[in-house]
Image (tube, rainbow, N blue to C red; front, side, top):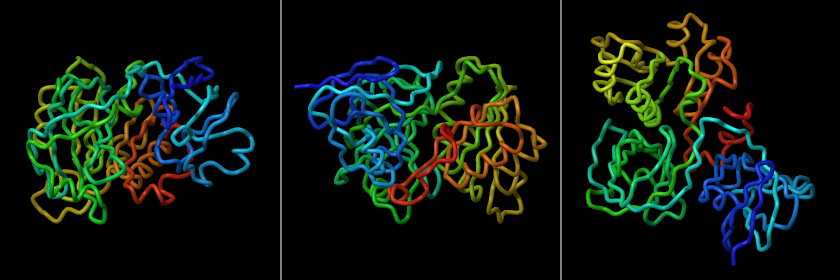
Length: 352
């Protein structure tokens, strides 16, 4: 029998099934709760219990301290209930967010291609269309692994039943080497989604600066294609960082877009270039952006997707250039190993 979960201050009421976490119940019914790691480690989904009792689940003592439990707090990503509960969550209203219920969808792998020596492109044709906002991600269920892996959607929402995933291999990882070596055309796979609040803030109506590192290009690719497809007239600049030219991908596509759309600019940046024939930018995306914008970023919206170190360096430069938290939006990459390190903990800012 389902229990009722009431969420304040929005007043939303959702059904929670047996052994279902509060977060999963809310997201599957189109109700947003702040979250990040989904493993009880970061504390982003911390909520206050106003009425009823919960089973706290496997919440880390770092993310949820004993004193906080005593004060009536729990983590929505680990807590389950056996009775009706009322919670209060720190929810910021985002006028650009759509209410899209999370769901499970099966699909068939129809194409695989090595986009770079380290990044695998996978295309799946789903049994039904997946509604999502450009920039969001899905959980990909890997056979033999208990926890699914999160990958950003690289296709634009208008792609119908076909989705694209760009999967960078983590040498010491578990799931990504398996995916690279074993997934083949014809395989059936389950995905769950969409997740995340990394999408273009259309209501801001400001020029956009995208920073992407490695396979972090997935989300910006989706967002930029969607914006241009829908007639965006704001200036859009993409800084794509890679170690060398071999690690750049979709460069030809972005150069073609640059020719077709006068408001789009593509800036590939190589950090470890040893090819004397390369005529583009070298170094790091944050330094190149600082040079090109003369250290002044105010009046823009910035979207960052890539390794945490890259994002942190870009945030520092942007803030030095008078662009602050409300105009900086990030989607950091975390491997399973990161979940047990300081990389995912104690964010300096609430929303970036």
